[in-house]
Length: 462
Ligand SMILES: [Fe+2]
Image (cartoon, rainbow, N blue to C red; front, top):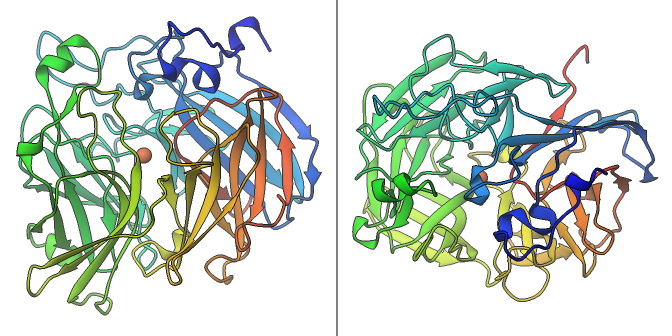
C-alpha cells in the first residue's frame, strides 16, 4: 500500500473522502488469490463493481469522482485474479462535460463511475450524464459507445434487461431543455431500436426506472435541476416539493406507436433504486394492476446535496382501470442497493437482497452494515452479519444454474473490515443468510465503498 492509499480520518475532509470512502491511487494486479473456504466451481465468470474514486483525491460530492472498476475473476473454484482500474474516460484526461461558451453538454465526456453492465457481449461502465464507456473483460477501457451514432442522449446508470425478450430498456434525463426524459430500447443484439421523449414536468433527476412484462415505469419526482447550484460546482439538484410526485406507466408495445405514459400521483417522496416491478397481464397483453417495489426516501437533498434520508422498502400498486394507487411500506428497517435474481426482472419475485444497517437506521454513512434478504411472500427479513466493524457492498445474486430456483445461488460482494482496514471478496449462500460464507478471498488492497456491480458469467469461448 502506498502512503497515498492510506485511508484518512482527517475531519477537515468531507465524509465521502474519509475512511473507506477515501480513494485509492494504485492500480493493482494480483493473481491466484488465497481462498478461505471453497468457491463453488460453477462460478465461472467475473464480478465487477464500479465506484467513485477521484484521481485528484478530491471531489465536491460523493457522486463526483472518477469511475474505478474493481474486478475478481473466478474459474473452476479458483480466484484467478483481482484488479482495479480507472475507466479511461475523457473526463479523466481533463475534458470538460460542458462547453461554457455554447452551453452544450459533450455526451462523450462522463465519469463512468456508477454501474457496470453487460448487454449483447459488451461491458459498459455507466454514469447517467453521458454515453456508456465500454470496457474489456480484462478491465481495459475500449471507449465511448454511442450505438452506431443512434444514441443522442445520455445513458442511465440503471438499464434493465427484460427476462422475456432479452431487450435492454433504458432512459436518459437531461437538464437544460425538453425532452427532459427519453426512453430507449436496444434489442438483444445491442441495436438501438426505439427512442421516444417522455413528457415529464421539468428537469427532474431520474436515477432508475423499471420494466414489467408489458410496461415501462417512469419516476417523475421532486428532485430537480437548479442552475444556481450548478454554477457553484456542487450537485446541481434540490428538493422541490411544489414539483409534485408521480409515476408514469407506459405500455411497451404501444410506446412503439407513440403512446405516452399514464401518470399516477403519489405522496411526495424520492426513489433512487427500484427493486422490481411486475404486472398481471399476459405476454403482450393489457394488465389491470402494475406493482412496483422500490426504496422510498421521504425526501432527498432537502437542505443541501449531502442530506441523505434513509430508504424504506415500499410497494405501490397501480390500478390501470380506476387510476387508484395503493402504497404500502414493507419493512421498518432502512436499506440500500436493493437487488433481485435478475432472471425475475419484470416478473413477480419472491426474494430481494440489499444492504441494511447493523443496528437501528443508518444515520451515519460509514456505520456497520449487514446483508439482508427479504422474503416478500412471508414478510420475513433475514440477515448475514459480517461483524461489528464490517460494512458490505451491494449484493449481486448469481444463480447456481440456468434452471435453479429463485434464491438457489450465491451472493457476491466486497466487504470491508474497519478493524483491519482490509477488504475481501465474499461468496454467500443466497438461500440461507445464516450460513457462514462459502468463500472469502482476502484482497491485496482496500476496496473503497462504491456503488453498483454485476456478475458476468463466462460466455462461450472464455
Ligand atoms: Fe444507483
